[in-house]
Image (tube, rainbow, N blue to C red):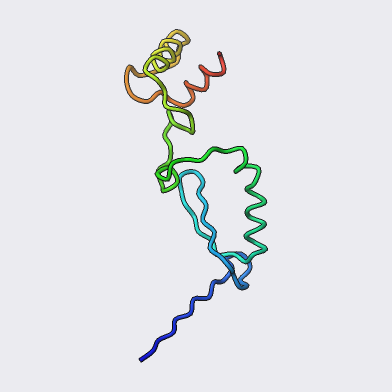
Amino acid sequence: MAKHTQVILIDDLDGGEANETVTFAIDGTSYEIDLSDGNAKRLREALSPFVTGARRADSGQARGRRRGAGGGGQRAMTREKSAEIRAWAKAHGHPVSERGRIAASIVQAYEDAH
């Protein structure tokens, strides 16, 4: 017995016929959306300025792992830099632990001051 299975994509925005499934990620969550050629073009055009200004992340970042307070898209901090920020934070009355991640707000305050 022969069997023929046909998958028809429906545009998730307007309910019309879709031509492709577009995958994108933001804030550590990946999404898929079925779109017509026109809606896919609109999505890509809307994201274009952000994609142009961005850098590529390793695949682990786009699959549900949101970067923590110390990460936030920044490069990994060296021990020396971390110690410098902790010393600065203590000298300026910011609460900071001796070990572990430094809160993003403290890192930002340090960067703003320098």
